[in-house]
Length: 313
Image 1 (tube, rainbow, N blue to C red):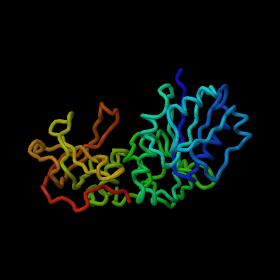
Image 2 (image 1 turned 180 degrees about the horizontal axis):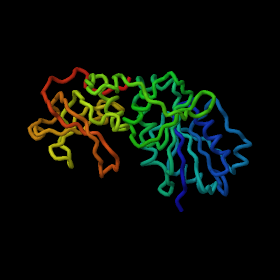
Image 3 (image 1 turned 30 degrees about the vertical axis):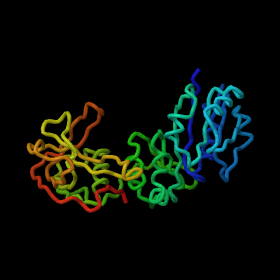
Image 4 (image 1 turned 60 degrees about the horizontal axis):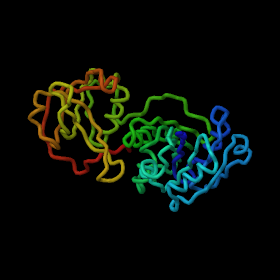
């Protein structure tokens, strides 16, 4: 029989153990279950023995560098769990772990990633590949120790560039969740009818336009990017885009905007252009959401940017 597996990812001291302790005390989680908790990390916070006993949870600690699929299978045979929690080590490659190491009958039901907001910029700048590995499979990302003075757009857009489907929660230092759906402060005046998007703001604009397309309806936009290719569904449509570095130079994510122009078929892939035109809102049947589309009035071929990668500072 398949066994449900819940993976809690995140770097050391990001709050994984506290999150798991809270989860174990939820009756909806442990009711009629025998849980095996496999920890690949020993942080500052210990597991509460009372929680473990009450939730019928057996705790096993393994070295994240010295274990095999057979070791995991032996634990299943020894403890006979109906569900498994895995506290992943921040240095583990979750891509390899999920695809190659866990037993075939272990079904990954959910991946949850905790991130310390105060250290996130440091990890992003110095260990981007590790951040990528922690977020790529995540169904939910929790930014804890969140300070309301920190721009959500920087946090959110860097995560969404890696995994566009994950949900994001912001948790204050006192443990409460930020429920305020406040408007992000954008680097351009959204109240203007004519916006000239600076090169540095390309990613922020595209992300916000995809999330809130109605804000940009009928606005005139001038923006620079690369011709990525023709759109499969929109007549005379093409994608204007740039790459966001999500892991390394070999691993990037496309950030872009659908445009319409009669010149689309004459453009060359990777050619840099500046386009100007009006935004309309169209329903995308593939993704079942409204998306912004820019109908181009002016188009000019320009030299490429020295720094071609998108940032979300």
